[in-house]
Structures are given as C-alpha cells and as structure tokens.
Amino acid sequence: MPSVWQILSWILALVTVITVAPARAQEVTVFDVRKNLPMSDDEPVYRDFYINAGSNAGIKSGMIITVIRKRALYDPYQNNNPSDLSVPVGELKVIHVQKDMSVARLHRTFDRDNMPILEFNFILVGDRLDLGTAHFGGGEKSEKAKAPTKSAAAETPIMVPKKPQLAKPFESMEFASSKPVPGDEQAPVEMPVQN
Image (cartoon, rainbow, N blue to C red):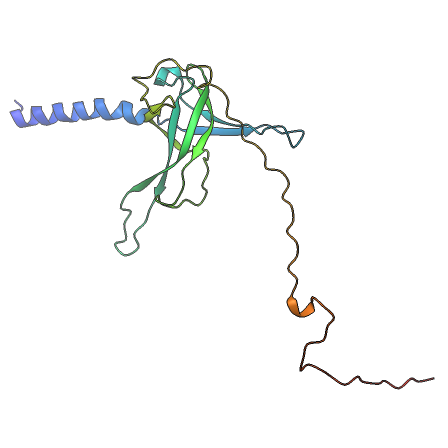
C-alpha cells in the first residue's frame, strides 16, 4: 500500500504536468515576414508579420502586442548557461485575425538607451509575442478595452525615405585658393628645353 507521501508526490507531479503542458504547447511567435514592392517613391511600404495564433488565443484586430526576443547566454567563467535573456524588441499592431493565424504591422520599435542591445534591432521570424501586454492603444489592457474603433484598426504605413541628398564635399583650406601661403615661397625651377 502506497504511503501518503507517495500519493501526494504523484498528485503534485500530475498537477505540474497538467498546468505546464498547455503553457508550453504553443508559443505565439512570428513565423513569416512579407512586404510589398512599391512602384514609386510616394507609395508606402507595408511589412506584414504573420503570427501563429489567432482568435482562438484571444487575439483581436487592433491589439498592440509587445514582441520579445530570447537570447541564450553563456558564462565562460562558470562554464554554464545561466538562463535565457528576454529582451523586448518592439510592438506589433494586429490588422487581421483568423481562427489560428493573424497578421500584424509594426507599431513601434523600442529605443536601446535603457535596454539590452540586440544584434538586429527589428522584429525577426521566431520572435515571441507576449500576450499579457496586449492592449488597444489607449493604454487600456485588452480585458478592459472596448471594441477597436476604425482609427484604432487603421493600417500604419511604413514610409520609404526619400533619396538622400549628398552633402557638399569638404574643401581643405590650404587648397581653397591659389593665393600663396606666407613663408612657403619656393624659387621656380627652370627646365632646359631639348630640341
């Protein structure tokens, strides 16, 4: 007959498996990035981020969600991997939702002044979405937010910068004029002419 401690340990193991398994079943990530090809300089460039979760995960059109990148770190002095560093990259605004998939566009990227640096400071395939940070623009959390208005669900275009204008080349002061520099006088050299 099993003891009370064995029964409690089995119950604890069962509860752990039940609660942890669904949480690890699917991480909400960006699985594809696509952009349009503008035909003129005035045409905006749209970059769509495809997300592997949709209305089944509670995502709604107009939501703004923080994107996190996990970086594995290695400590060579202790010869171990302390843990993964979760670094916020930016925010995406959801523009289209289906049952198991959604599409979002870049809302903003975070400044690196007070955050850990990234090799690539833009959203990449494989970055994770933190659904706990989802809100509808006005700072309200998604549970308290009303249905998004037409302006909240509007697309945010990414504009292509105009062609840069070249700066005037730097002119060195010693070559700027043909006026001789005082104290730098040299006698002219005459070359003999050969016939």
